[in-house]
Length: 308
Image (tube, rainbow, N blue to C red; front, top):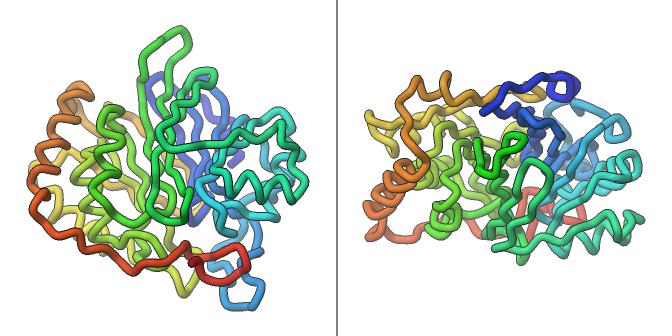
């Protein structure tokens, strides 16, 4: 994360750092570090069946951030060994999360004054960005977030990022974010325990029509991973040869700068135009059945086992 924290992000760009699994850090031109779902421990390996496959990129007590967002109350997202330590060392940073995560954090000693409950449909304003809360199909109160970053002095969004959190596929996901026209989509591909698989992730990308799509939620646990190359092949088939969406497969603990000019080479129009293309893409799927991946919870549940 040190590279992201020190990075000078140019206007209209967003720095994205993958912490592993569904955990990411974001920083836009106006500054301020946003971290989502950091899993920076081995707490899920209580029975020895869920050991990390990758190193912990940063110790929780060393994380410096301005905002912490959590999507749901499973160990690899609301980590009891990560979130409280971050809260303690960043007492001025608000923690935005659904009610179940808020309850869990309170039991772990995180001050209630630091916690802000997130519910689908909310638009939460912060300095230089707005966080739109989107429903996710996973646990009872799982959510995703669309971050709309605004340049200083601007009242309009310049770059928007949609991180779905853990979720199954449904057509409502794309519809819920249509008005925001996300530039970047971060989507799970593991296809187990309450998450969409690579095929459904590709279908969501086709419906959202972002400038970039980043697969996530793989490579952390041996029993709950996927091959991003499968996603790339399925994405190419779902998007077609005229697609303007650029897939980005990130390395663990690496930083990527989203740059519209470099990503799009001038091919992208206004967000409303992309939203219209997304609507047209969804119409093509209206008569498909609603086949979904295996039902259940997240890869890791509160008790250290699989999600419900």
